[in-house]
Image (tube, rainbow, N blue to C red; front, side, top):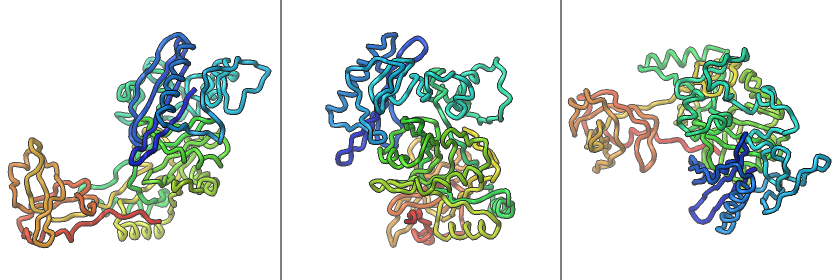
Length: 452
């Protein structure tokens, strides 16, 4: 069972999540907390064989937070506050609204998880691989290399995103690794030279097996709702806090759903869908998955308290893709994404089926002091008659010997923040043919504001 709480007052916007999970021979109560949108801290509050003690710990945490002003997220307008008493399980009786069972034991409304594993599985159904196909991304058997793998579709996971590495990085127990979902990541397509970039773009534009989309500059999330359980994870698979409005925005969708989105402010830009109802869509081609998004678009477009979902347009054909590229560069957008229309969704993959091309800009800057003790240089630009520092840039130790304050260098960067610094600057070369007076602020390509 679980409870999601939040606290909003002034500049404070915090979340607190409590989960009671039943494992094969023990019970575990976990708490997660932190600022909304950030990676949550986590601690085990109870670990033992007593179900009663686990329930008592759960309720103590919940009541403590409610007394401190936290509010509880309401799922589908149902009361999910957990009380001290729990109704006994009766096979012939329908549980109260919002109430679920954990391995045959009736619990109060809003427990959300039926078998204590967090999967949302009905305990009356057999635990088969088919049952969990759309829920579990990393089966526990994959952690044991001595066991043969099934002959199903190949799920390629790059270095750093294998189940064992995910488990170690997030400090998870083996059975908890089943709950981690790492999204399909975008592979960088930028070349090392302007000519290489020109060839890469030309190939993608002419290849009609690829579509194009705008690359958004936000945080990569996956949003999953199974039964009444909503989980939002970042690209590392870590659970993060989310606004309760997301639950209401998903309310029009029938059944389970799993979305791949980019969050910018209060807008969640939808790129992909992996689960809809009882259908696992990860094996479908991207164009087919996108068509499912189009079908449910009207149910996802209803804003709630300023929060909203927006479907990112899919562009096909050389002429249309070229027009999109030109429009994005003209508006100083971050980049363009190319996806193979028949590409399946592979958790943790970073391959040629989904690529990103960033629109880097260049400028000349004067060198100033960088970070102390680091192999870096400071960068400054002329604003009228005043020099303004616009950030630091890492430089290899070998090149540092030839760079001195006052020199002019060429810098490649993604964009600049107004009143701030350059984003993702990288050293290109020393420019002894450029005067320091030419290093003006007018060169900066500023970060684009999101269109309404």
